[in-house]
Image 1 (cartoon, rainbow, N blue to C red):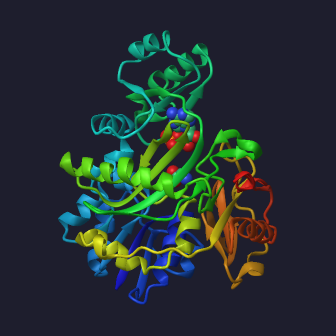
Image 2 (cartoon, rainbow, N blue to C red):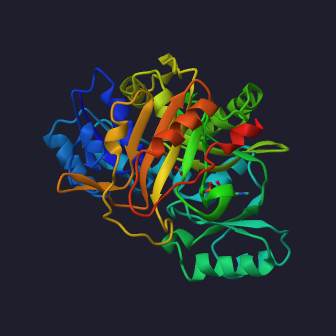
Amino acid sequence: MKILIVGSGGREHAIAWKVSQSPKAEKIYCAPGNAGIEEYAECVPIGAMEFEKLAAFAKEKEIDLTVVGMDDPLVGGIVDVFEKEGLRVFGPRKNAAVLEGSKAFSKDLMKKYGIPTAAYENFDDPDKALAYLETAEFPIVLKADGLALGKGVLICNTLEEAKDGVREIMLDKHFGAAGNRMVIEEFMTGREVSVLSFVDGKTIKCMTSAQDHKRALDGDQGLNTGGMGTFSPSPFYTPEIDEFCQKHIYQPTVDAMAAEGRPFKGVIFFGLMLTEKGPKVLEYNARFGDPEAQVVLPRMKNDIVDVFEACIDGTLDQIDLQFEDNAAVCVVLASGGYPVSYEKGFPIEGLENLKGRDGVYVFHAGTRKENGRFVTNGGRVLGVTATGPDLKAARANAYEAVKQVTFEKAYCRSDIGKAIDEA
Ligand code: AMP
Ligand code: GLY
């Protein structure tokens, strides 16, 4: 088969690597890809939002399967464009990707179908949002409705902070049109877990659990980022919690989308908080997590091409999804200054030390090649994943591996996976 992957981050590198393991994959393309992905795929310089160009490329190259990794093209309707052209594509249509594309939609869906989540109100009028805050309890959580690079969530401790937040989102448009509407919701406490799942419109099969580290600095300090590291599985995600979520969250979400005339095919990523009152949904994403994919996919036993095809064909019930009985930890090596401002173009040293090392995967997030050398080209530069028989071993392996690679102003958190010591 000829397979096209759409996207350019560490997640797409992990997908490309996993696809390359399939005996079915004869030729892999990635658009636009990055310098690391070139090891597995021919990268083509077409942007992820250039739907018509991508579809024309897929037709010209007789691509058998396209896999969309990123949220923006999914929410923008890339799957509809491909399907109209008669192309096979893995991912939700526009009317289903709204599960991630509009937080107000997803909150209303959960409310309508009794899926546990934080109490909330939606607003499209800033004055009403400001008035609502006067009687609210703090801390409180403000969310821009639309996609905001994972940065559209503000946790506000005081009325003043929250009022400033509403102004930033709805009036100053810090997150652009994503802030035309907003959600104001109850602040929850607990451990966070990411559960990614494959969905074929009616059947859902969950992948192994993972935990992200969203804040930039050690001890969960600093600004929210796209994710500074992950581990899998989460020791806090017990079989009892899984059973609860299967019954009250996962299947009900898939059924709700079908009942709304928006059958979901692709990956649903459940961002959960394990609160004192049970698991609740923090957010849905309509794609693999990044860097969650970088710890989940290396542990997956199945041929991922089979799973993608089963989701498209509605035969996921026939797939026995299996994961290794091991653990994985991913440490993100970022450019100093990320997520605010950082420099690019520094040569990356030491990658050869990790080449071919068993159980170690270097997924490129923001790199490019200059005169045959890898140089930094983004905020998150590399995701260094290592597996091990258990979480502690995987963590030690990941930190040993990440020490082998460096570039000017490289930065990583030193406490990825610290939570496992409390398990
Ligand atoms: P989201 O993009 O909706 O997952 O939000 C980003 C991060 O903000 C989450 O991973 C949580 O750490 C935090 N967050 C979001 N919603 C809430 C909430 N209702 N209570 C507490 N923290 C939240
Ligand atoms: N790691 C969080 C996300 O992919 O949105």
